[in-house]
Image (cartoon, rainbow, N blue to C red; front, side, top):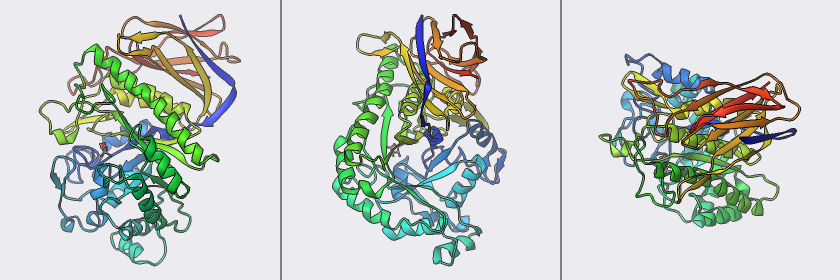
Length: 491
Ligand code: AHR
């Protein structure tokens, strides 16, 4: 029997709801033929946005959506995506498949999508190939309420009121696809570009700088030393893979061997070390903790589905992805005092998606269901938790069998989420919650063999089901299925 202890006596930091954020790039079928089907589509839509997708994401309380990239952001010129659609420029999407980008989804469409989703927009500006003026004018276009050339242009394009925009990224991966810059050069660029990202009226921008690639600690150190005082947060990008150190080996998203399951779990757990190490460097430069950490790209990255465009990054999504997401979200929750946002890549049809579509059909992935199981952590206070556990895995990859986080919401309900990484046998678990013994409790679990997944033929093969819980001798007892993610609620 495993034990899980929750310290109910002391509330920790608030888990920022934005940790449950998402990312949508002009990549493959994320925007076009994903979120956006156009007003004339036979697929039910409101102003071109797919109704079934909007409903599904509202259900998991999507808090924030990042757009337009990714690598696409540093080649995107926002003025190409406003005004009458017939006159919008057609361009090549050089990063992703070389397909034609007709700019029919631009700023107004993105803001409309966020309105329908009920989430906050997070926009990334172009540092790599754009100008300071272009970035500055985009912010003016979106947020200025008075008389100005950009505010007039917005009105001419049918939007009288400015939008509320809080989150703005000053470039993306500027150490790579965003310009191959050195940290010293980017730090200076950031200082310059960010100066002209203005606060107009009541709109206050939270400026997010391009942070490190995985374990590039030098980037964090140099950026923080040279420009940390000018930003609100820096971003970290890290993708979970079968071998975190070798991009040439990605492996299949389904039908993979156990060895790749275990190595993927090891790769997911590495997020803890990455966050802790980057935060330690950040705090050396910023002991008063003015700068937050935003993990604005994370998720699994496997081979594309056979027969699909390699530039579209379309992959299936299995219980391995669910366990990976559960571990990663637990790690973010546990760092609630410093990690203020995270954006899984990417919402629809790309990498570790919530939703896959095939024409008018759509399915919810196991990862979607994890976000559903975890949604009550949003805005709740972290509680200390601890699991007495054992190691599982194979000879090369040893991992804890259980991984958890806990919180208490504003109504006093306790939420515990726990991943069981084991591949065989149920795990009897006793949950110890001092002061809550005997309270009304319930649980839901998502479980299956490691590559269990939903298909368009069987869209509900993997979905959460209720799990029996029982108070015994002061602890809440349940049996976690093998390869599962479980959410426990104690009233
Ligand atoms: O999410 C796919 C790509 O991964 C993004 O465009 C880029 O920022 C990252 O390298």
